[in-house]
Amino acid sequence: MGSAQTGIFALGTASHAYLEFDGREREAGRELVAAVASLREPRTTMGGVNLVAGFRPELWRELVPEDIPVNVVGFNRDLVGADGYVMPATQHDAVLWLSGSAYDVIFDTAREAIAALDAFASVAEESSSWPYRHDRDLTGFIDGTENPNLIDAQEVAVIPEGRPGAGGTILLLQKWSHDAAAWESLPVASQEQVIGRTKDESVELEDRAPQSHVGRTDQERFGKIFRRNMPYGTVTEHGTMFVGFSAEQRRLSAMLESMAGVTDGVRDALTGYARALTGAYYFVPSIQSLRGM
Image (cartoon, rainbow, N blue to C red; front, side, top):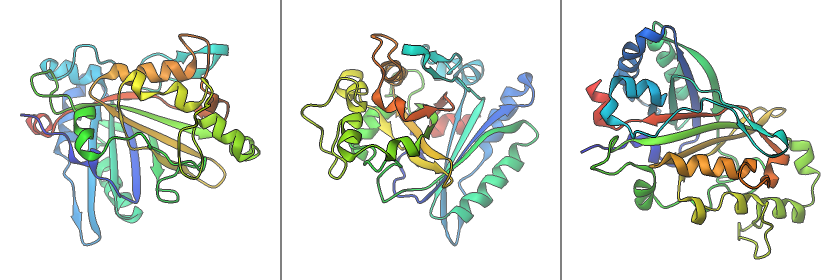
C-alpha cells in the first residue's frame, strides 16, 4: 500500500521554497533519484520542515516503469493558445518543495538539500513564497475556494490502490507573474468579472462571463484538483506559484488548455493580467516508493 508524501497536505505553513533541478549527466538519473530519496525531513527547535519530492515523469518511468501511470508526461512543449498566447514549457528533472514555520529554517534546509544533491544536479529554478492576508493571492482574491477538504483531497489528488503509481500524485508547477499596475487600475467590479467571484466573500457570480477565470477552470467540468498556491516574489516583481495536485494529469492539462483558449479560441480573462513564466509536470511518488530507491 502506498502512502502520499505528507507535506502535500501540511496546511498552515508560513514559508515555502521551490527548487527545480536538472541532472548534471543524463546517465546519472538513478543516482539523482537516490540522492533525493535519501533526504530526510529535518527537525529543529524552531519547528519541522515538510519536504515533497517529485521527478520528471520520463525519468521516474525509466527507473520504475511499473510505478507511474502510462500516460503521464512532462511539460515538454509550449502550450500555444488563442492569439498566440503561450504557456512556456520549462520542464526540469526533479523538484523539491519545502515548507515550514519560518523562512530561516527553510533557507538553511534548502541550502543543505542543494549541497547534498550538488554532485548529481544543479538548481535550474528557485522561488520563495509566503502567505498573503491569510488565504488571498496578490490579486486580493481568496485563492482555493473550490479546494476539497483534507479528507476529500486524498481521493482527488492521490492515485488509488490497484493502479500504477498508487500513493503518488501528479504535480503541475507554474510561476505566474502579475501585471500589478494594470490589475490594480481596474475597479473592483471589473476585477470580479475577470475572476467570476466577489472579492470580499468569494461568492461565485450568477452572471459570470464564460471567459472569467472561474468559467475557464470550472472543476465540475474538468474534474477536481487539490491546490496549494502561494504568492511569490518581491514588492516590484511578484505573482502566484500555481501548485496543483491530481490523481489524473488530464484534469490539469485540460484546465490549462481551456485557460489558453486552445479548443474554442476563448482565453481566460485573467491571462490579460497574469503571464505564465514556467511550466512543469512532476510525478510525486509515494513514501514507500521513495524509500525503495
